[in-house]
Image (cartoon, rainbow, N blue to C red):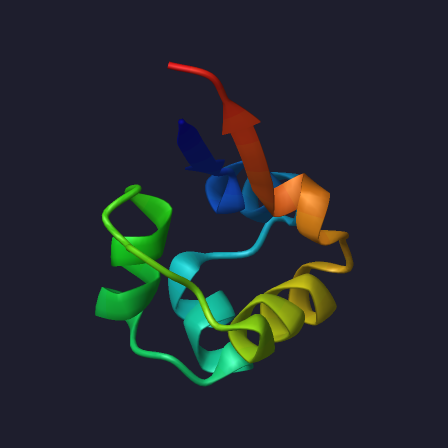
Length: 68
């Protein structure tokens, strides 16, 4: 089972930089990078909520399931 994080796709659609998104949701650029690069083991619902609010999207736009 693989969960794919598509934050970079939504950031490109919204023309938002990683630094701008990190500032908008209150996390460090390093932590955003970990999430974007599929290195995170978990994401808090509050962080997911903030990402969706900042990018004006739904959780399903950010997270995708792909079978191995």
